[in-house]
Length: 130
Image (tube, rainbow, N blue to C red):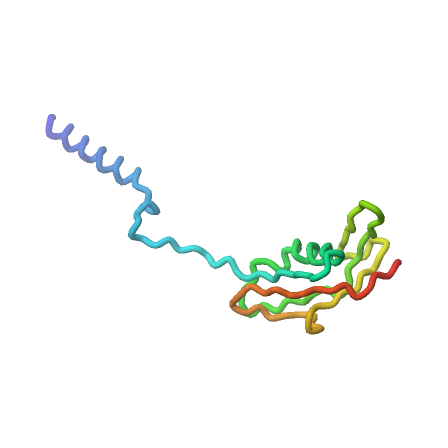
């Protein structure tokens, strides 16, 4: 009977040791992470045009992109103007007071993502009331 208890206690201890072991805690095994993808960042040289760059940078269409993906840029966005201390509010869909025509450095309207992050200068061409 004592031998059976010894064998059972050894089996229980082995079971506890193996069940508590964390396989990711082994420092010899490298951890594999998924690639995050590439992103497109829009910049502008004029502070007055920064809301356009901020709107484009906030869109998920330009984040976490795979290499070889072709991405098109909007050339017209819509917004509510600012007067005084109010900030400009911009939208991609048509439902506002102003139509904002924008263009990108090199007169591009799309880009194919390579194996690095991309920075593109954006310019406001004109703002037309609707």
